[in-house]
Image (cartoon, rainbow, N blue to C red):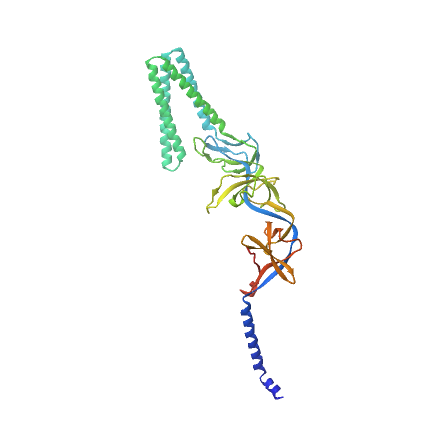
Length: 428
């Protein structure tokens, strides 16, 4: 009875002591076990199809794309097409104002007529008539020279005030230079004519006639080039200039500005770059399955059409090779420049033995599996592996269908409770 009374009086002390002792032994056990406990999961060797895929990312482009530029300069008068319009070869895309071009054509025609008349007179030996004609031509060239000089002064004044462009100033200077050269040339020919009629005079007249004919042809060609026509069948992808804008011609090494962009959208390409690791893995003619940003309900098939043989290092020093793929189906209105992600099957094994990749570890060059032999015991088996899709790996030898294998896991106890869980450890 005394013992029970003592226990009753000191029950709280006893309970406290029991808790302290239990906590002590729990801590000792925890320190012996360490911060994590090992765990394994059992897998069975099964048959399945394994497909190895590579993923590439590129952008959509038209098969052929042309920057439409002009061969003559001037003010853009008309753009009869808009973005998205279908165009055919020879169709009018734009027109440049022709007023100045027609004036230039009339002037070239007049010069040609004059040169032809002088040449005919030279052939007849009419020295007096030739001199008279050349004197009249000198006066005409003097007038043209003076007009060119006045025009340059006017443009220079406007340019100094900010009302004229660099191009207009350069054109005015060029006009003055040509007028000066023409004036000097006609004066020299007049001096020749005043001396006497000679075979040399006839040769000069003939050369002048040829030169004026060439200038006439160029003036006619410039007038024709004021109407810009499509060189391909396709669609207008973008319109860069509007009526009223100044067109800079693409001649004599000058780039010129782009009026619009026309492309052949009957075939859509995907342009991308691949690294050296995929050279030899991917080949021309391989099928590709595309995910397009503007098509959500289906995959679009395609093929690899070209892999460049010349690679260049990117900004990170990695050598990249351009690769071109082509869509095999119509996608309606393509969104050129949008992203396309393609999956390419590079290897396939059908109905082969397989295991999850987490069930295989490496030891040097060997691949190891922990085969369950019985009574929970395991045996390390060297296996030969084949292709893998990232989740499963082909087992070529070392195991049979139905064999059981232990895969390594570990359970972490570090961090707050909400972050605890299991993580897969893939060896090798």
